[in-house]
Length: 542
Image (cartoon, rainbow, N blue to C red):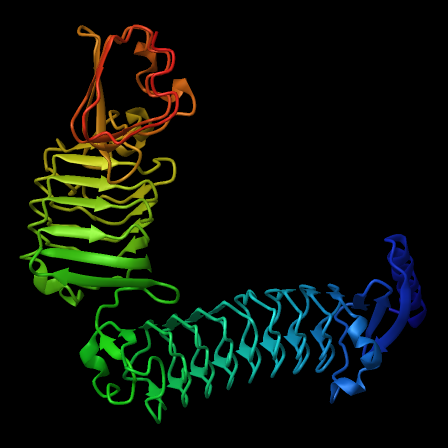
């Protein structure tokens, strides 16, 4: 592009700024970029395609240094490829920065001391954040770091106002003091691609409550979590056989050592125990990154509990599970409604479980996850499930009833050789609409029945209509689904004929518009188990 054409483009930009009601008061050149300051504090940076700003040895070397306190908003356009070192250091009135999606690097000290900066979007194009780039950005409460970012420099967010940080897997190193003295930081997730965490990287983050350390970390340098006295839980996926941790003074985490350090197997961390100022607990079952799935077993209650949130790890065999030894004693399984994935072989051969509830939060059920649960009679599958892997319920031959809330239009169900549930296919799978499941009839070893009316797992509420007795009956347990439209009710065709409704003990709520307009209804007995009636329940029952 010629200089003359570039000058014309610059002139057009100035005209556009004027047209927007702003007045350009001064213009500078920086490397291949043009920078324009307007009378309202708007600062525009643009240039030719992939134009680079100049780096400055100090903030005083910037041409706009004397006017930096007039800068309130910075707009870095798509044609700019970087943000120069010290470019906007000390712009104390700056509150907002928009960074174009072609910027690949944010230079050292670029926004250091921007104490009123509250809003900045770091695009996925950015690969490096330089040393002290957001040092003392005290008002910056949140920032998104995207996949593609590779490195975070020393002191990059030192004394920033961040409340949480999620470092993507593309980052390989976190600099020294990178998030030190972030006094509002409560949660930190370190991606699986991070290999090294620099000295004192999170020092004196005294409100930091929870930390995830990714599986790829091999070097944790000195006193990374020094002064993090509020940290209650650390979820560590790092391989202890490959890890070096240079904690030279037992000063990390809570001073009394009560921080829980969750790992897959506590005995693998025995060599670290004298140097980690935390209680090492082998109760981790998460898959990685932001997953905080834990497990526990209550021997008195014979209950295995999967708590926390996120995806559970897969197990290559049933003996690889840390809870394998309880398979012949556990009579109850509890899965948190924040767990999103059940791993391969997770509960294989848990043969004494009579009933299993899979909450709506779960999206994936791994292969052979519940295979050979030979005494399981009833199962509830939540609405969030979209994938049931190979023979997840193989040889669950006692199963009489499955209550399935999954959406058949979104579900993939791999039943292998049709080995799930009863061998004669007599297991009843209760769904909202049996016709919607016609495509599964040939591949899944169960019989679909459209009599489900519960709101979601673990509700097991069913309905039936007796035309001769003109009676609508509800059986089972849990909350009834709500209906926005009367036509959504599966018994809507019978509404003018129903004279009696029987509500079984165990039902806990009656859904919105459940009996709206049932103008022949004369009798209803509401059991003590019902604790709520939603809107318009009996409206129009004249």
